[in-house]
Image (tube, rainbow, N blue to C red):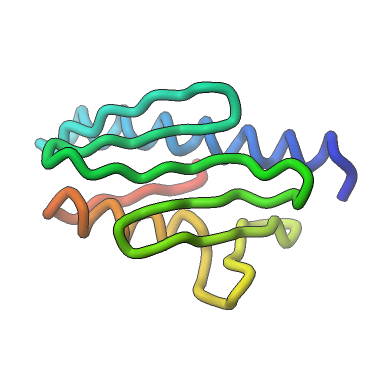
Length: 110
């Protein structure tokens, strides 16, 4: 994958995270504050905990930092998959956000 392809897929993932936050806030009491600065999205939950998703352009990866730990993802042509075999980005984001918000939340790529 060249740099432009990486950036297109990575930017689409960040936009999907932002859209999902808006949808979740409209549909639930989660009250997630999401702020985007360049290639980084910070999700702040009502309890003050955060999840940070950012682009790692030199490695062509997405990184996520949550209370559960740090995760690195590479695009496999269809999905962002954990580099250590721990699953797919949006699934892990849903799990981590649910734990930090204290209610079930669903993040998807669409």
